[in-house]
Amino acid sequence: MGTVHGIKVTFIDTPAPGFLSSSTSTMRRNRKIMLSVKKFIRRSPPDVVLYIEWLDLINVGYRDFPLLKLMNEVFGNAIWFSTILVMTHSSSTLPEGLNRYPVNYEPYVKHCTALMQQYIHQTVFDLTLENPLFLVENDPRCKRNFTGKVYFQMDRSGNPSSCY
Image: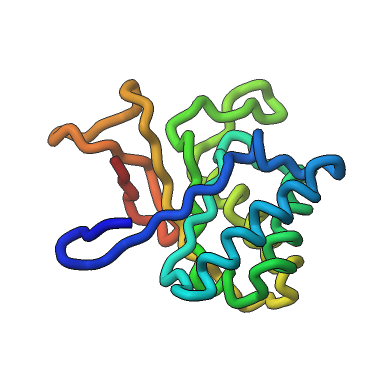
């Protein structure tokens, strides 16, 4: 909790997917963590929720789908309407395609974003919901422009995206 440029901000950081696992043996613990967060946000609902996912780990057999369903069950559909998808590891080496060459960046990001959005649609039963996307990277070896800022090839709208 603090103030940034005169605006009161509160960050609630939940465990990463490795800790907040979607295996059936940990779902009880996940529910307990989410219920404690729910108690806190009842008094002050979030204006923005960042759902952080590794860009290089998203696939068709998305293993965290049960977590999305649990989030929806605990927080309700409304949570998704203030959620921004944040894809980390955005400058990681992309997976190999069918020809054993890395896939192209833009189609890969669009594919991963579409998969995440599809899983959210399945969770909330609303096909019209479109969450904004941010690509982020904190690896010091990632690409930088001439001013030294981190950059990526595109964002959801096809524009350059950057984050620090």
